[in-house]
Amino acid sequence: MTRPICADIDLTAIRHNYLLSRSLAPRAKAFAVIKADAYGHGAEAVARALAPVADGFALLRLEDAIALRNAGIRNPLVLLEGAFSPEELEGMARHSVGGAFHCRQQLDWLDSLPDGLAVEGWLKINSGMNRLGFRPEEAAAAQARLQAHPGMRLGAIMTHFATADDARGPHAQWARFAPLASASGLPVSASNSAALFGFPETHGEIVRPGLCLYGCSPLEGKSAQELGLHPAMTLSASIIAEQTLQRGESLGYGACFTADKTTRIGVVACGYADGYPRVAPNGTPVAIDGQLSRLVGRVSMDMLTVDLTDLPHCGVGSRVELWGKQVGLDTVAALAGTLSYELMCAVAPRVPKIWHD
Ligand SMILES: *Cc1c(COP(=O)(O)O)cnc(C)c1O
Picture 1 (cartoon, rainbow, N blue to C red):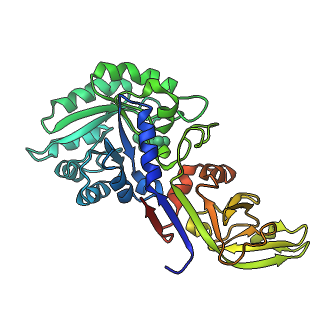
Picture 2 (picture 1 turned 90 degrees about the horizontal axis):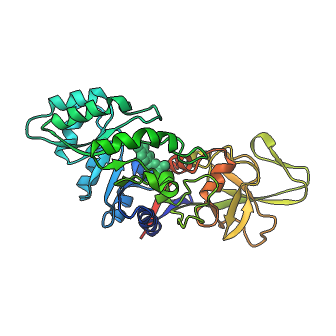
Picture 3 (picture 1 turned 90 degrees about the vertical axis):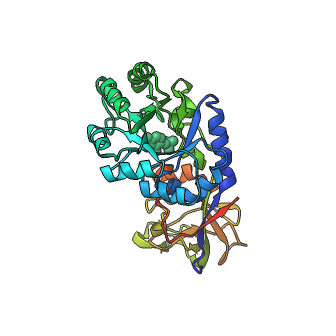
């Protein structure tokens, strides 16, 4: 490894966040959501770290679930969008991987499941998000069809909230979902991280925390720290060059920062091709050898620039935390006009990950 950039992943923090999250719903199971390579943290490493404590894992792709089975993960696995083809349904049955059933086509595919194979299904209801799921009035018929099939074990009835993280909350969807969920007699699964932290009435029998496991706040207006969550990912890179700008000189593409006094600049080995957001503005916080400073100038593909003027002891070789324990990912995301979800998932494959137990 030559280029001085890496993403350190704190597995102890992820375990803490999982146990904290589950403790908020003490009567429910918690399926840890590890789709998108565990939100950029490495699905296999995260699954191994949580396997001794996790009630199950939720993910997206059958091939990732099979990789976990091959890595020795025995916990229940559920695919949040279910099978994408009849062949996948068979693969799910063969590898003991459950999944959502959200549309008529997936019910039809059950008929081509070879005799003797069985799959666990979670009946997915569209309570207002309007992406996946049976409409409330279709729920009873879909449930009856699933329950009539010899190859099916119905494990839960589920829905997903569109606005649990903002001021509207999940109330409208919950009001549509709760009565039919209790009429179904099935275990109920509705809460994402935001509903888990904010709306205990939605906990049901199975919660599905994702974001909070990685130490970011799922609630608008509440910080991760206030919620007791520990940041899991630290993205850091080294300073590879220094420049001194005279008053009036400008910096980088678009010359969007101009020095109003003599300004010392550090050039950092991290750019938007590594996953740092190009739109992060002048002033976005960074921590250089443990001391807070700021981004100046436009982020380019492979480099970004930081202010060293008040840090005389920092220079080439100093380590710059772009986000992590000192600089909150949520803060960087907000300044870049996006969400921590997107930044975590966007860390590029060329950034080596280092996992710490
Ligand atoms: C991604 C996802 C979750 C987890 O959501 P967070 O907001 O990350 O907690 C839960 N349920 C479903 C269906 C999802 O797709």
